[in-house]
Length: 122
Image 1: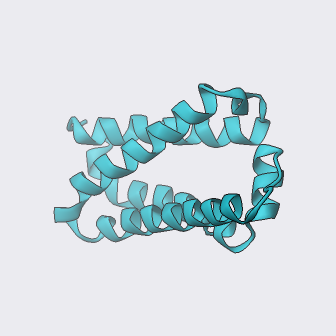
Image 2: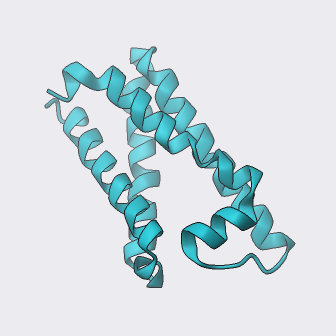
């Protein structure tokens, strides 16, 4: 089921992941509204921007891999590691109390599950 529909799955989940470009463009606003925190200095702002850009790149790589089958498995593995790490960072810290962060982590957890089904051939 997942394997036969992997192209649209990669496009949809890739576009959703790539929306974090907003954090690169407006890091203070995104961190305040998503995590309920403020960026206190240039280092935290730079790291937030970098994280947003990294997620945009992961998302675009997912979309790209939808059209290039040879890249799918390594891309899905890399995206799964990134997303599982985010889930652990949210649910393993006080960020789990942030409704938006928890929602994002739940979405990433669902994506990891779908990606695992694909990797195992379902």
